Amino acid sequence: MADDLSVDREGDVLVIRIAINKATPSASGKTLVVASTRGNQKTGVQIEGKDLYLGLNAYVYAEPKGTT
Image (cartoon, rainbow, N blue to C red):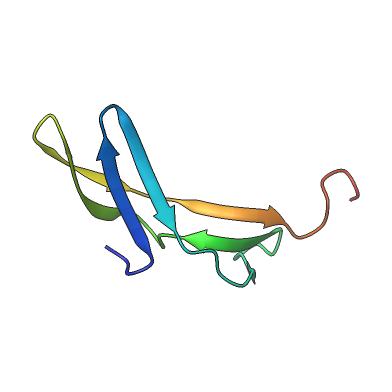
């Protein structure tokens, strides 16, 4: 799992913490990525005895929606 990512289970709630980074353009250039697991990552959490994997992308639009 990435160093800037932590995943914990608190009862029936999955708690995800990931660092917010400097915005970088996505491959398409339509969005700016501020946090990502860069693909699916195995977490230390298990659900019904099975390993939990997480894929996460957090982004903002490069231009406000509706302006193009």
